[in-house]
Length: 207
Image (cartoon, rainbow, N blue to C red; front, side, top):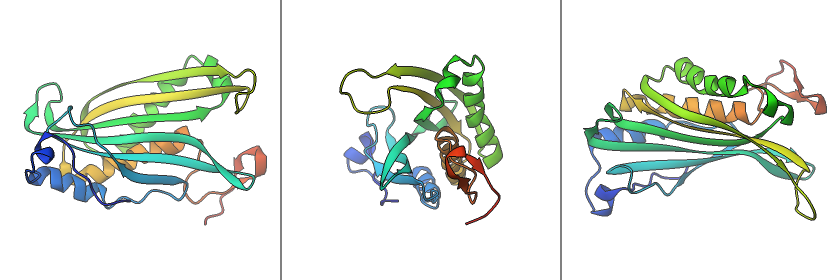
């Protein structure tokens, strides 16, 4: 992961970041993404909170001699030392995920609920204390015509969510949960499990 970059009105004014915000950055700096995910620091939004930090993530899979992107996302930490009434706290996590998925799922009425459970389950499994969780799941089906490159039919799922973190020292757990959801949306097997050819079935061998 690239070194931290600070953004927001406080950083722009040359102020020293608050200790609680530095604690959050130190926590997420300890997280290492699985090999299929490229995680890097990106410019943070500057008008949503006095202090902010953003990470971008991309998921790639082999395609012959090349690699293709199958999912991408952003994880943003917003911090307001004075607290924010709408957040019910000082630290808000914002997540965005977009992934290509199975086109048969676009007609599955339960898919949105399942995709949302990826996030809530991941936060719970990671032990990431959170509240005021909200967001949307959107499915989009596309058909390409003419000379436009790419598959003729594709379906993408987008998840947008935000939640309030209860302990800045545990922000690594929130980022870990985000990466888990990104991997699930991208169709990655559990860490350490190989996929056997085009069938997509996994075996239990570990790397």
